[in-house]
Length: 243
Image (cartoon, rainbow, N blue to C red; front, side, top):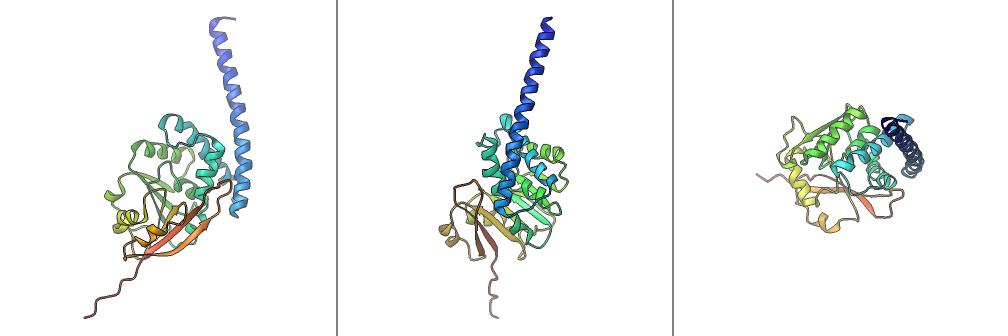
């Protein structure tokens, strides 16, 4: 066997081993995803579940180069990122309107899981880091998600033709900073859903009077021991000055 043939054989053996490892990983991911969906009381068709698994695989591959997340284990990614994002599907689905703005989306969280599970929604995924938007463009192509629109911009400088129906954020900023940054983008009818850890009582107290908390929803994320909640906000109806 020539040196070239030996090199080809080694590469072929490596590729076969990698394919086997990927298949084993994906099988475990599918099993845990199904258990997680059961825990969230979400029933998703097989094609949506497969897209979610493909998203995790894509995130793993790009993370090696772009450092998109500090979480490296795929099963932990599924719990910390995917299932956590899916925990607000019901909240978003119950909001009127189709346009959703994901503020500080990062690697597409919660935007991409929402786009997969709510394909009728149009999601604008905004982040100030260019490499993360490059990843989102690749995810849009690879996963065939026509309903996501990655946008490289600082949220404070973002301009929109019309206000979104829903604004979501995950690990973005404290509530006062968040509503300040999106204030000019939101209408009275816009629902804001801010994903948080423990109930952010101090942040709620510090909110400006022009915003009110509609609900603090406790989120039960399977395989995640940490406390999670979603703070739902709307503009407050300010009293009109008497004439």
